[in-house]
Amino acid sequence: MTYCNRFSTQRLIMRPLTLADKHWVLSLQQDEQWKRFIGSRGVNNIDDACDYIESTNAQRKEWGYGLLALEDKQTGLPLGVCGLFNRFAFTCPDLGFAMLPQARGKGLCVEACNAVIDWSKSQGYGFLTAMTHPENAASQRVLEKVGFKRHGIYFDKTFPAQTLYWRDL
Image (tube, rainbow, N blue to C red; front, side, top):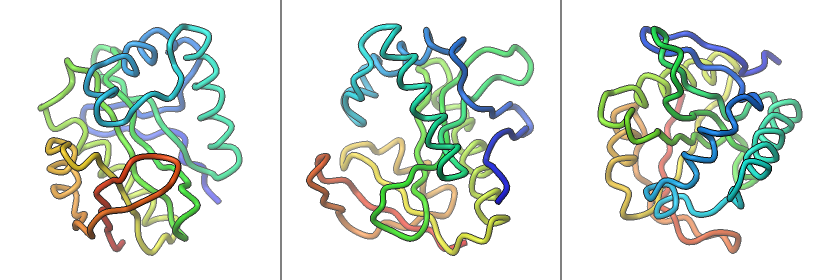
């Protein structure tokens, strides 16, 4: 297995999160759109942000994939996160992403998602899933731009109902 560790796109460096990212990870998870559409992940202070970063990196070691930090290739500034999750509901991973406010609406998320999709294809995955809050039109547009199709509502007792998307690879 090749680990989903580092990518470079036209405008992005995509790399594992480090503890040096703790301040912007906290800001991202305190953002109103994160709270509304993703919900609390228990990241309320710097220590929680460090725990979240360590947890996502442990998932990468276990599954071979996970969240990646998105950096502006020219400035090195943080832009958000994008990567894959194991929801344990399907045989392939789930694509997830979130952008800091200053990075939204610039096509950066589409660029990051395409890099993760390309990596997923190279690993032989047959499909990917993705889920959004039913009212998160911006994320739904991103998913549709990268080839995902809506497949109804996904219900799970661990989080509120989500709009389910699917993409064959």
